[in-house]
Length: 431
Ligand code: UGA
Image: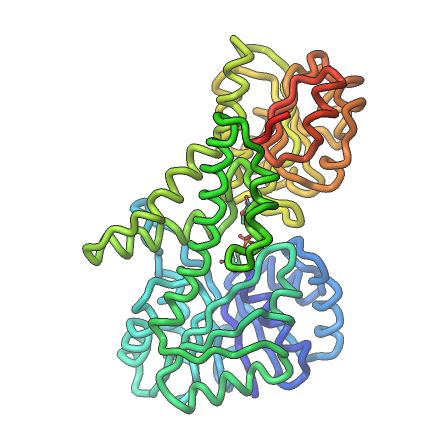
């Protein structure tokens, strides 16, 4: 089949490359961003993602994937079109469907009748129904819409797609189900077939459950600090119960990224607008917002004034393995420190260029961790990159003027840090 993909962000690009990789279908990806398409045609990935460069190069060379800004060319003879464009958050927390509608309009204009339109973007329950009506109102042709939410995480996106834990197909007809099963030929993953609304809800419920799990651990970690328990030991003890599971029990300075913050707010908004309050998700959002500032609040107890003080921030991205800074806890913390006139030195192995776009010359970007630490009086650890986790107490002692480390990702051994004379704070841990 010929498969078109609208949007070459994380979801669209990885989906396209992985479908092409299976070797059953020809894939064409389209995007309005000319630079992006030019890069992709030159086999350069516009995003930092493990294994993606290699997959991209191989599939472009094999001719199984192409990239174009020409929507007509992409859509006109496609059998299946995936929509994988952004659904950014509006100020009230609801999802903005403007980009999906733009693509739907072009599909109505250029595609052949009977082509299956598949929404991969995360969309509120009922959107697939709405887009099907919308697209069919724009032309004489007939289109069916199916929901196929994406569960990949950044940093493991290729593996999460090739070896997906599940593929969810939200369909309203046998024809749509058959076409999508054909698309996923070669993927060795369980396929769950539901109606469209359930598929849409599976995506939000899954992401929000994971966010809730993290916020729950933040909450318990904060209580651990008060009552003298240790969150790592507590998490380990919980993890042996397979009803709880061992994953997503890491307490820290909260979740960030382009998904959990947006999807929790979107589901909360959706439930409110339907006259129901999702109290669990409201709590998850509030806990996470507060957790993001945990380190600086703790530092405030030790430091009277940050005015002119050299401080160091290690790790900027919302998690390791990505250059993405969206909703990264580092951003609110750096803003907090800027407002207090600290001299802020930052280090991140891949996120610095993106950070420059946010803070330009308001902060200092050091390519070397020790340069960032040198002469500082407080160090804030925001992301657990390996080179940051590998730092020894000696590195802090040798470089910092006052060795105070506020660790939001629990990277170091508490006893070792304290015994070596470092003022060390981490999340939910006791000596
Ligand atoms: C998340 C989901 O994990 C994917 O399944 C989903 O497809 C994706 O959103 C999406 O909707 O597109 P992602 O945001 O890339 O993926 O990253 P995660 O690995 O889930 O991490 C999200 C945040 O949670 C990070 O800031 C991470 O540091 C934090 N986290 C994660 C914790 O604080 N503790 C944990 O135990 C796990």
